[in-house]
Length: 187
Image (cartoon, rainbow, N blue to C red; front, side, top):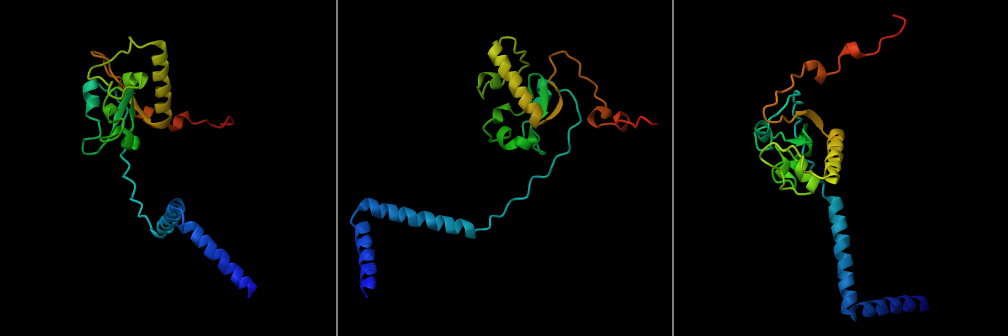
């Protein structure tokens, strides 16, 4: 019986200790709220939206600045292309960044080299930019961005200078051919 009196005394003292200070009351309410959120989040089955359908890979081709503008993510298929250091990449899989409403939407359908070099999202021009006035540090930054784009996105072609003729890419360049596979030496 002494044990019961001791236990009830401890609980009573704890209860009074909590309600005597507004800070303690606030902390208890915060703990209750957080426990509620944790339990509720475990009960909800979040429906994962189906992934967007994959667009077919673009055939390699070169783009003028005007042609590139068409691929800013606002067209029907939503494809987004970005040029970096004269090379055009399909960044559609990063559409939430480069597509409409994304933080780098200003780069969609444009040459992003100057903006990436100067860390200025709005620095993408409407005309061809030869980047000749960039400093060495800024050009190093462009090359670093270019290598990141090469690793992450599909290379589509080149950004043409005014008056430059496009390269004629063959279908064999898009797909590995069987003739380049190694043949056994004993044949």
